[in-house]
Image (cartoon, rainbow, N blue to C red):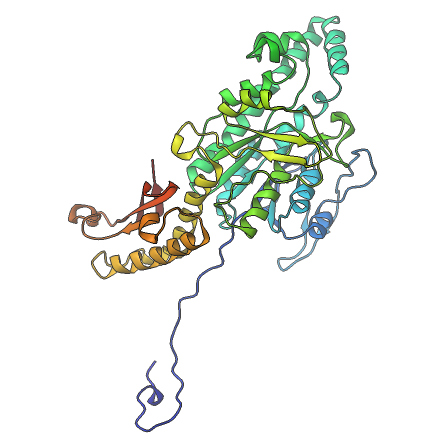
Length: 452
């Protein structure tokens, strides 16, 4: 814009218009909760407080009895939309309330019906740009009535085994539920890995205390642990990924279902702790040694000797400490790569990838030359300097904490001819002067991040 005020000729005060580039809003600690429905799911719904969620999914009664939301509609900017009915036994109400009780401020709720609906809903989550956590508590819905009293489950198994061969086959089919549960958790991990910008909070299998055939012959790892943690060891052996963490055991809440003695999957409460730590300190703060608000008990009491078995397998324990409450006592990922062993380290890089994709999208199709490279270096240096000042990166100086390189060296002519812009970034997320190097590639299809 040209104006006479921009070329003043006499003394005075003049206004000058200058366009500024606005940064889009950037949040962390925003989960999406996948809940099971009896109808086809609707598009993910944003929920920003507990009152909104209670309006979305009402609960009635006590002792874990849930009312289904049927036939009601919600009006909004896009007009009325029918709400899908929650499937019987859904953990969604307790889990989302646990999220808000532990400091969560913003989440999405996505509903699915059946395996095909699960796949479809999971794929649709890619459109949620502000989500960085994924929780799927209703994967565990099929195990709800197996997490009750030990003797009751053994009696049920014995009764069925004593009846017709068809009933025996029915029980064997129910045992395969464990395979189904872990396969669906692996789908969630694959989703996070494919997108490269979000992290999965997974629930450990409950202490089901099934008959000896299950614990000793199929899922047991240690004879001494047959009735204790054989299932979670087996579960961990089948889950391995950089972008996820496993939490064990289940927790008891005031509104937990009677079928499982009040115990529920802990992912919602854990997600709230993630969100609160992000808001208070940042993603570099390990979401551990935090009290789990709303947790009345844990399904199994874990002592040091017990955690000595679980910790090397990167199973994050939830422990009850006398006088200190029930706390998250672990912050490890499911990765086998030592670089990504800790949740906080991995989330620093995932958050950086999200920020880069959101804030540098406008460099796509720009001329790939020495006019573009300094701009990318300047923007990224500003972002990582801010992280360094907040304590997310280690080092006495910014130079020790990170480096950004986008120049002719990272963008040789043969690479530039392909339409890509490559930026190399080194972050000291583990110790001073020890850099984890990642490469950021801008292309016509978007931004990709490659690391160790």
